[in-house]
Length: 251
Ligand code: CO
Image (cartoon, rainbow, N blue to C red; front, side):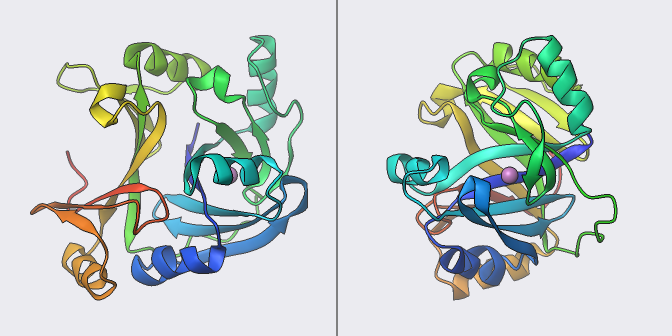
């Protein structure tokens, strides 16, 4: 896995979500398109090495539409950049449950989805972007971590390691496990630390200019919790996503 290509977020309206992700956070829009076979309008916004994908369902009866009516806006899937053909054949040999047995055209390039049952309740997308893709525009925020809740964090981490070959990043013991992906990471935490939620629960980003970010959040009157080196934006202000934004990349 070369990197976390994007975190996918289901929203009611792309226009409304741009008001927060593009205008308040300042993430540059990379592309927007209608993906007919997924029944969505989708957009990619740059966030450092990674991107944020916003998905607006065009039909309440399709997969993304049902997700929105059942669970509301929020984190929907995570996408790794990889060689999708090689990865799919490896997963097929291991009889991993797939939603796509052959890659199809998606916003991120040629993509394929695994069944969430195969990945501890997380919907995982694999993508091979077009070779001639333009370089990512500079963004004021860099997605550094994606947080996954699990009742059995060790087992979930082992599963991600064995399916995708992700190296474990040293932590100071305890029940949390961190797996590296490019410059980013997946952090697997016990579900009871995150209100019992299993699957993707939060995104951690790092701000290039933290003070400027605080100004922008103030001007937009966002609901957030503040610490000295981190703010947590409440899901009511961020289209259903727990967002932690910190001043420093480490820890
Ligand atoms: Co996606």
